[in-house]
Every structure is written in C-alpha cells, then in structure tokens.
Image (tube, rainbow, N blue to C red; front, side, top):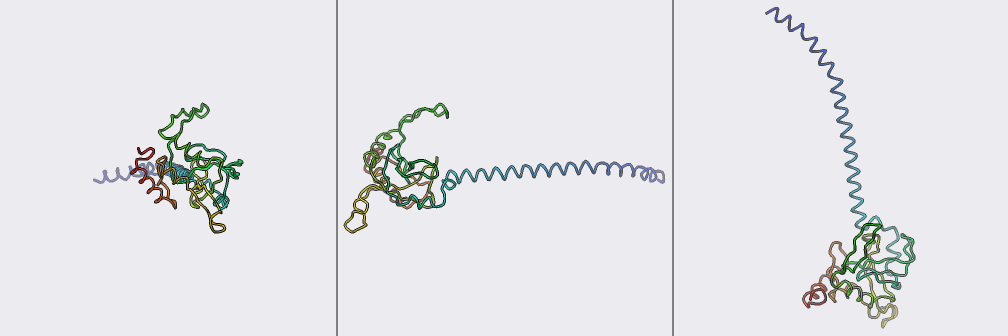
Length: 229
C-alpha cells in the first residue's frame, strides 16, 4: 500500500505539468472562438443593416428629400409625355435627378404593361404587351397628354421604385369654378382608369383614396368593363 501511495505521488507532478502545459493552448482556442464570434457578429449586423436599407429604399423612403413633398404637392404642371397607362412625364424640374422633367408614377393603381424592347447592356429581354396595356396607355394619352394636371402627394411616401415620384394626378378646370378660386370639373386619372377597367387598384401601401379605388375596381368588375370583360 505504501508503495502504491508513493508511486501515485510521484506521478502527480507530471500530470500537473501536463495540465499546466495545456492551458495556453486552451486559452488560444478560446480567444480564436471569441474572435470568430465577434467577426461573424459584425458581418451579421452589417447584413441586417443592408437589408433594412434595401427595404427603406424599395419603400421610397431613402429617395425622398426634405421639402420634396412641398415642392410637388399641389403643383399644376403640363404633361409632356405619356410613358404608359400609369406613368407620365411632366414639365417640372426634378431637382433630385437633375432633369428638366419629372417622371410620375400614378399612386394606387397598376395598369397592364405595354411592349418593351430588349436592352443588351443590362441583359433585359424584350417584353410583350399585356392585354389592354396599349388601351390603358392610349386612354391616359387622350386624357392628359399636353394638358395641365395637378399633382397630389402622400407625404409618407414620395418616391417609389426607380426613383419615380408618386402622385395622384388630376386633370380639369383648376380655379375656374362658380366661386373664385374653386375648381370646375376635375377628373382623377387613376379613378378614370379604374372605372374604365384599364387598371387594378394597389393596396400594398395606404393612401387617401384606397377604399375609393377599391370600390371603382369592384364596380368595373361587376360591369364587365375593360380587362374585366
């Protein structure tokens, strides 16, 4: 028994030396793990920030600038070009884009697409016209091309995809009503397109005409008008 105890005591220093020798390696592993955790944690934060910026950009919140809503809201401007049923250019300088005209995407509706050519530089393939795309474009052209329109903005969302200005567009007799300063007959372009069955109402973002536009689409469907035939 005494010999066993002496042998065990003789072996203990070597075990202690071995354990002490392992400590630096263990510490190095811990430091590496913490460094990797910190590194990947930073990457995760950057990734989440980029996602958040992308969401804000797609919502048009990063593109709008202070005073932009006031600059456009209520402006009466001439339409210089009709792009398609729900997109027009007006003769008002776009100070953000640095152009003499501003491209307007009409709030709250989506018209069928017209044919689009291929663009080799961007690799975009040609796109065939959707049914009633040309009809919607011609409807908008007859109603507003070369006419003065009034822009009505929603302050919470000024710009949309591709930096286009979002606006309700009105055409008619501005300030020539029975009483001085009042309007005569005024037509909401989006409402006219919906009533003719040449647009769908969009409910992805709230706006002041949302329920009205929905009712107009419902009426067009019930009457089998335009694309709802």
